[in-house]
Amino acid sequence: MPNLPDVVVWSIPAFVLLTVIEMISVRIHPDEDAAGYETRDAATSLGMGLGSLFFDFLWKIPIVAIYTALYELTPLRVPVLWWTVPLMLLGQDFFYYWSHRGHHVIRILWACHVVHHSSRKFNLTTALRQPWTSLTVWPFYVPLVAVGVHPATLAFCSSANLVYQFWIHTERIDKMPRWFESVFNTPSHHRVHHASQGGYLDRNFGGILIVWDRLFGSFVAETERPVYGLTKNINTFNPIKVATHEYVAIVKDVKKARSWRERAGRVFGGPGWQPSPPTEREPTAEPEPMTEPAPPTAPEPAAAEGNAAA
Image (cartoon, rainbow, N blue to C red; front, side):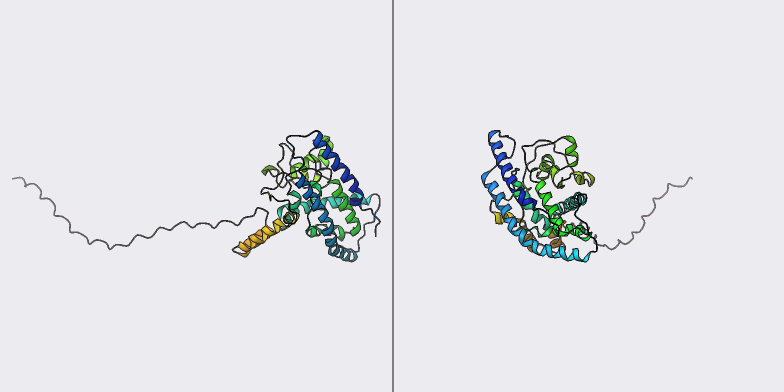
């Protein structure tokens, strides 16, 4: 098994330090247009982050078992070398893009990821607002294990991706240099991702790199100030409700569904999926009652011609 560090654990002191610095910065130099901090919101984000550590540990048990079984079945092996690690990071970031995109466009997956978008603030504590049902993520990375990436190496790459994304959850950084903005995910790109405006919805899914969005048509640049949160905000700071509200909504919609097609759409369609309204049939004109034809009338006698010439 590769001996790789747990980058998330090693990064916790940096998370705390940067969050404190951002809080002080917001207090000393507030931006009236920025979302800023709100005590209950930040506490909820921290609570969701702590809860995710516990639940992720539980989900890892079956996931590691599946990955390990698959790894033992494949004859391929990718060694951990100085030049293979960047390639594995690249591969993990590619599949993260598709996992992230899938969790936005399939409602049952969105029920997991919606937690991260439920805050109306955008700061470093928002990065910690993680779901408790991340069991839906693992299928997207099966190809990496199938080609010989060790599950422990995949876990390292996923952790590195997560750590990178911490610093991009801020409004205190405007834009990075143009070359950096072209290649990497940045605070500007990620503010768009967390916005609820129509033109910003379901955009900028990249983790470390933004090039995937540019390649696959999901990139949008930041042009107007984002409005954070959901299109229908949940108005709660209860961590249990934050973690489960979309699952509850799905169950309610499935119960009210009138057909199996609608039930499938409520679960596997997009978050805003609605059944097609029934088409109204145009009223057909009633046939006119048939009437018997009138009997023919005798022709009137022709008018008498003038008297003949004498």
